[in-house]
Amino acid sequence: MKILALDASTDALSAALFDSDAPERAREIFEVAPRAHATRLLPAVQTLLDEHGLRLRDLDGIAFARGPGAFTGLRIAAGLVQGLAGGVNRPVVGISTLAALAARAFEQTPAATYVQVVQDARMGEIYTATFERGAMPEPVAEERVIAPADLRVELGAGVCRAGNGWSLVVAAQNVGEAPVAVDAPHAIDVARLAWPLFAAGQGMPAASAVPVYVRDDVARKPGAGKS
Image (tube, rainbow, N blue to C red; front, side, top):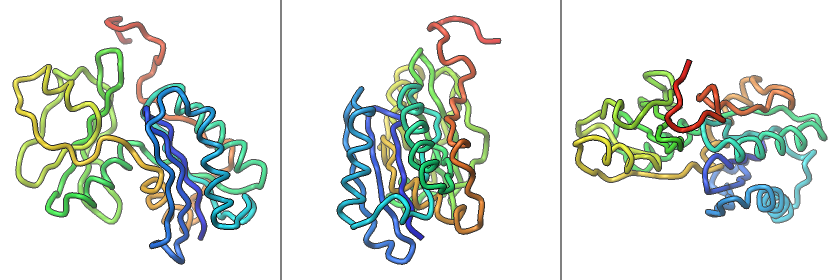
């Protein structure tokens, strides 16, 4: 099963090509390119397809990091996925950005049983969720957006940290710094998490490729109250 995956949910962007028949040959293009997602993402896709001698119609599905994350980046990725998948009538799967971070953190930290993910949500807030190790990262609580000072920091030898928002928590609370296993999501992890969903027939129509913001009002001014 050949899967194309995209991520544009942070200042980084990435595209990946994954083949379940040859997972060791998975290929990813990853770069930190703030405000360049609209111009860099599609060429990265074309590069991957050209390298493998593939066309869009040769793919079995297209996956994307559906959020939470940067508003503009999420919209760019979702719109691109809709166009690519709709043009060749291929199914899509959206994967949580936080779950993708957790998956990489588990891979890089074999002793960890839990990963607490904290992403900078801007406007003085963070996106967060804690995941338990499993065949796929399992959230132990719903993804949410909160103030850094309100985060309950999970401690213990079996817990590791992931995400680019931990400096905000350290600054807001009297907690010590600790290593962060990974700070940016990668499209290759999105592809790997999407593969069993595609294989189980859980792919959705292209029009279903929509962002999940978690924050209800993405245009709310900093410090403004929430309903």
